[in-house]
Length: 282
Ligand SMILES: Nc1ncnc2c1ncn2[C@@H]1O[C@H](COP(=O)(O)OP(=O)(O)OP(=O)(O)O)[C@@H](O)[C@H]1O
Ligand SMILES: [Mg+2]
Image (cartoon, rainbow, N blue to C red; front, side, top):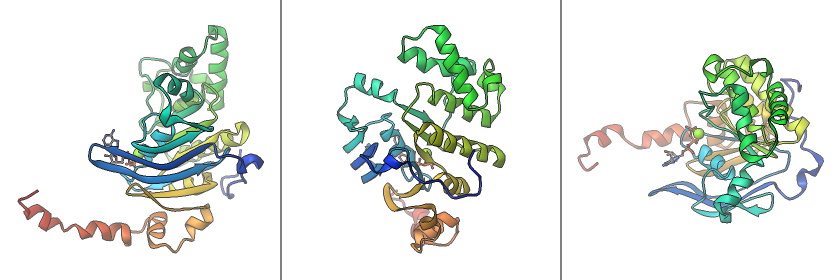
């Protein structure tokens, strides 16, 4: 396992090859609300990319687009050289098996044991016999330290264990890319470090390209080869952990250091609460 205190290790040697994910001028709109504005982003093969941003900035929306869970309103999302925006539903189903997603909500099936949860995508997407599936499930649960809890249901395990079980399920089909949406939300500090080490370990040992959304800045700096900061559906900064920590851009500085004064909070003050309350038009 990597040392908790050291800077992230270098990217793999083939990281300069064609990016595994390319988002080109991506826009996403829900009704009249434009949530992502003309975003362009490359993710390198084997990279650990962390996406930062305030609540509602559009992080989960972007992650869901890259994970082919939703479609862009315009622009292109190219994964492994193929534009997923022009795939049919059947092609998308097949494409999704190359990626694992740990959703913000966890999304384990409550009526199934952990083993059954992990087995589900394997049963759905392969013709493997039960014995082989059992072996794969044990290996995935062992990877996240839950093999002894295989027969428990989600209600019988802790929050941190649920995250790890979700991760075992995301790993079920040996994905090339894993997307993690707030993997450490609600966990105690030791579990946060454990989940961070698990993500780093999977990236380093299996070469899995890793895209993480987190609000935990210690985790973000521990995990990331590179960080991007989203604000109101636009990228406002990108850089290495050191570049982001030492940025003199006021918005980046405020966000990264969690300061109460700065452009992010000034913007909120611009909308005068009393005027808004007294305005009969709205
Ligand atoms: N399915 C949807 N339908 C309508 N609006 C949506 C939908 N999903 C997200 N939004 C809107 O898009 C905006 C961005 O949401 P998103 O979930 O991407 O934010 P986020 O950056 O992940 O925030 P958080 O840190 O709170 O998870 C929000 O205003 C949200 O209300
Ligand atoms: Mg989110």
